[in-house]
Length: 308
Image 1 (tube, rainbow, N blue to C red):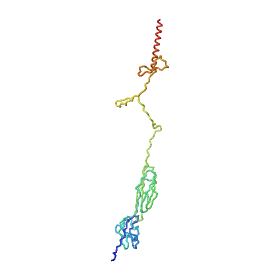
Image 2 (image 1 turned 90 degrees about the horizontal axis):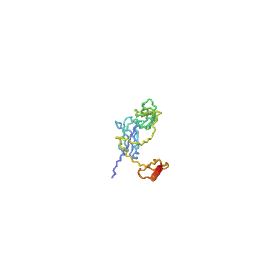
Image 3 (image 1 turned 120 degrees about the vertical axis):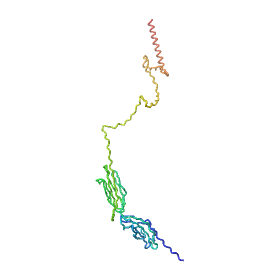
Image 4 (image 1 turned 180 degrees about the vertical axis):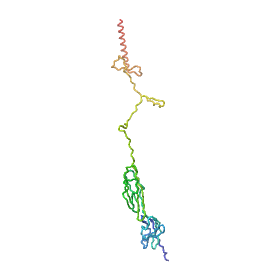
C-alpha cells in the first residue's frame, strides 16, 4: 500500500512590522519567522503591499531573507499603509502580516515648551528630534536690543541640540524672544516648532532709611528695679503677698552710762529690758550702789561735823 502524500506546511508569517516616516520616505522593518532553509529556497520572496488610501499595490518583492525596506516613492503628507507576506516554492504563501501606517514629511520636535530664566545670566540646552535637516532662528523680539540673547548654532540635522544663552537683565522690565525651529525637505512644505524665552526683569532695590549722623541707636542696657520702701495699694489693686518675718539679732545699747562712771570701762545695760542680766552688768550695779552709799556717808559726816 502506497504511503499517503503529506502536504507541505506553509511558511510562518512575518511579525513586528514597523513603519517610520522620514521627510520624504518611509522605512519598513520586520522579523522573519520562516526557516533559513525556506529562505534559501530558489524563488523564495517577500512581497510588500502598499495602500495609498485608494488601492492596494504590490510595492516590491525582495529575497526571503530580507528584513527591511525603504519606500522612496511617496508623496509628502500622504498616509501609507503597508503589509507583507512570504512565498516559498513548494510551500506556498505565508499568512499576511499585521498592517502599519506612516505619513512621510518633515518633522521636528524640541525638548522644551518655553524657558523662563531669571534676571541673572543663564544658558539652556535644547534637544531637537527631526527626520531631516533643520534650522533655528529668532522670529520676534519684545525689545529693540537683540544682543541680550544668542544661539550656539543656526542649523542641524536629525537628532541633535543647540544652546540658548541670555545676558543678565539690568532693567526692571522683562525681555521676550521667540525661537523657531524649522524642518525642511526637497518636496514641499515645512514643519516648524516655535517657543518663547521670557527673561524676568531685575528686582528694584528699596531705598534704605536716612539716619541723622548725630543720632545713635540707644545703647542696650540692663536695669535692675529697686525694691520699694513702701507699698501703696488702692481698692483695685490686689493685696500684697504676705511678707515673711526676718529674724534679727538683738543688739544691746551700752553707750548710755552714768556721768560719774569712768569712760574707759564698759557700761552695764539698762535693767528691766527683760531676759537674763549678764554678770558684768550686775557687778557694775552693785559697785555704783556702794559708791553712792559711801558718798552719802561722807556727806552726813561732814554735816554733823559742822553742827558740832
